[in-house]
Image 1 (tube, helix red, strand yellow):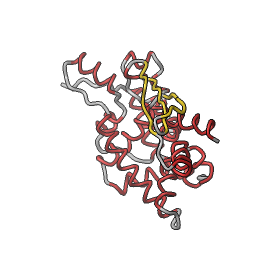
Image 2: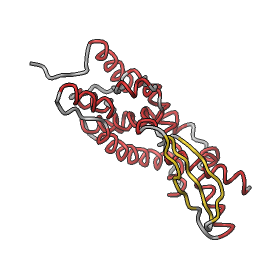
Image 3: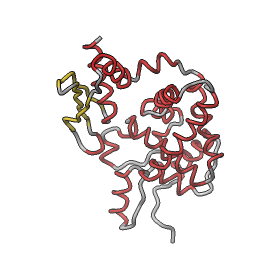
Image 4: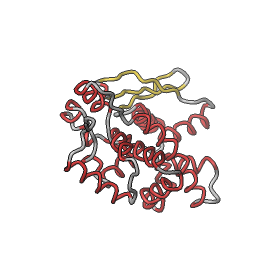
Length: 243
């Protein structure tokens, strides 16, 4: 008897399209299915069939590490004269929610994501945070299904245009936390401090508010769909005040 599975013929066609887009065919498609399974779906599936169904969080953790390594290697090769700091900024401008979500949309991952009914009802298939996590989980799944060389080849293709299109000045402009930190170090010889002051909404759609302080003095606040994006927004608003 077959185990309970969310896979049907229409979903299988989405999976096959995805494999074609990334030019990689999974040996174990269960890994791919897990990479595309949000915890909301896994929880519902487990309750329904009384059988443990794994979500993509562990693969996301693995994929994040693999992606950092692969991007570090690619950037060192592409920019052989860059310092460690410059390479770190370039990597941060590529390995973030915005770029990963764009890659997800280019792969049409929104068609493949397995979401719980509540997450679907709130448009989870189009949420940048969920899509970005799915890309990292996909990378983790490819790594487990094959090896570093194979997943590096996929990553190189996915990020090729973004790496070739890097504009160091523009990327630096986007990193508001780095700019604020350097400005504060230069002007007052101390670093800004961030505090997450509010978390609003359910776990699958939390909205964060961050406040930034300098020497204990409040500078500004910002908001975003992740703690990092809220801190970036707070830094951006602080720079507008200070500059």
